[in-house]
Length: 151
Image: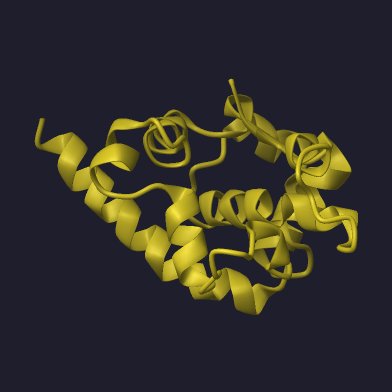
């Protein structure tokens, strides 16, 4: 399953005055958070151990990794079973958790204080920006785990 794709954004309503790689920033930030929380599948680790360690060591951003190796796509094959379950419920706007509590894109907009006339592409791909949303994602994951384990 494809959750997101750089080209969906770049070929869509992407502001042409911005660098093209900004269309992948939000995808890379989420991917990096998954990596930091051990939600990446073993196969990906086997294919790219050095590059994934570079992301963990903050030498490479998540979007740089995804653009270079996977053309900016976030697909289910990259994530563990737990990572896919959470992503389906939170990253996808029609997920149960997303509808009841929050979804990634609303949290992303709030974390970066994006005004109504701004879009997600104005967030710069920096570690400082990753750290701004990291705690929010941690909190959403904890909430999700509590809700899904209490079914």
